[in-house]
Image (cartoon, rainbow, N blue to C red; front, side, top):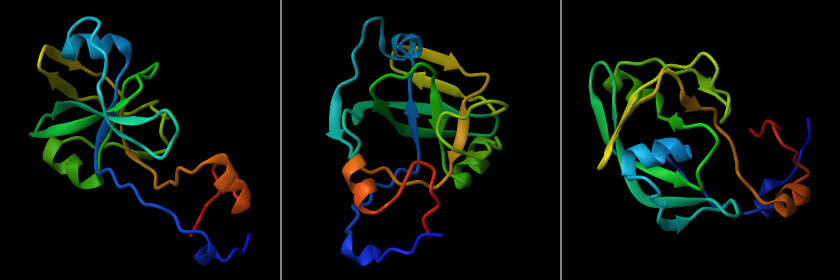
Length: 148
């Protein structure tokens, strides 16, 4: 295991209890054909942003409103919720790396122009750090390294 004095590297924190990444098809269904996501806040990852758009998640037991959409669009829709929200929704998502959506539960997404019934795509994101390649190099970290 690598030992590094991380006190030398201030790391800004961005916490997201829940958010959604949408495919083009699902963005059209939820916000209208051709709708482009409107950036509200740039994230620490270059090109990534929190959008003005929000959706409601609906599960077998309840719903979670005002869930932020993140952009840009992705190839496949993905919903990331906290383990606490699984009880509100009545689903049991696995704790996974982003993008690992095999054998995950689905949920209903509601937007101003329609709804989408996902048959899979909900995870509780495994804790992780986003950083620039320069910061990773300076901290001697590589993708998928475990930081304690």
